Length: 107
Image (cartoon, rainbow, N blue to C red):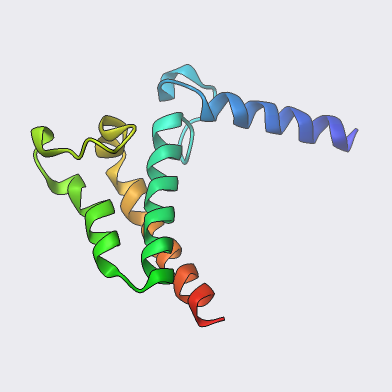
C-alpha cells in the first residue's frame, strides 16, 4: 500500500519535471514544470561550485546573465529562455546552494 502511494507520487513528479509548461501538468505552484526545475538546478549548482572553489565570479557569470538583454545570452546555456522566465527560481536556489557549498568547503 505504501509502496503504491510512493510510486504514484514519483510518477506524478516525473510527469511534472518533463512537462513543457505549467498547464501540461496537474501539479501547480512550486517546481511544477521543467523550466522551474532547470532554473532551480542551475542556480543551486552554479552557487555550490562557486562556494566550493572560492571563485565568486562563477556565481556572477552563472546567475548574473539573467539580467542581460536577450541577444546577450551566453551560448553555453541549454535553456536560456526557461531560465529567464523562471529567474526567481534560479536566484532563490542559488542561496542554499552557496551556503551548502561553503559548508562543504569547510569540511
